[in-house]
Image 1 (tube, helix red, strand yellow):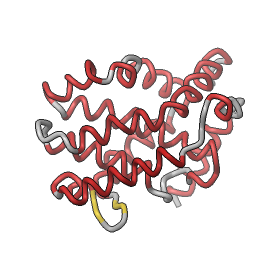
Image 2 (image 1 turned 135 degrees about the vertical axis):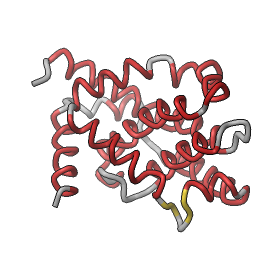
Image 3 (image 1 turned 90 degrees about the vertical axis):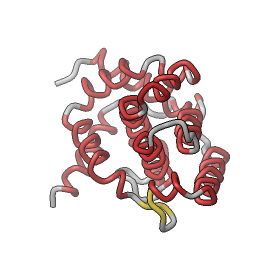
Length: 193
């Protein structure tokens, strides 16, 4: 069982990450079009973007604030994996996008401490399914290889950022972490059927 202080830190950090989600996604879009990066790193970035833009992610965005928490978690996990796959050029993103990478390791440790098996489920799902994910009929490899597709995905991301209405004021509506854990557990149970 997690402590109250861990839950409090989790809720506070998720609120912050919900507000910064469109900015974090900008890193993904930058990486998708960066031809200096290894293809695998670019595909991981595209896969995470697809997951965030897709209406059929683990917790549907139509559920409101809670529906974006899985996107936040996927982006944090994907940024870590991106660094692992990106080699030297990928590591340069830490310097270019300080805000998005500064607390990445601490964020992932907090997510693991609070979400427990749910974070393992998300990470496993991400590793297995993310690269196969499709958005508007195209997969991550297509968005990386084809300039026109890359521009389309970028424009979809811009549209997402424009419509995204979570700010500091609305993020405080997330009052406790239990609703997050419960949502992930429900989704995990559905996936095991």
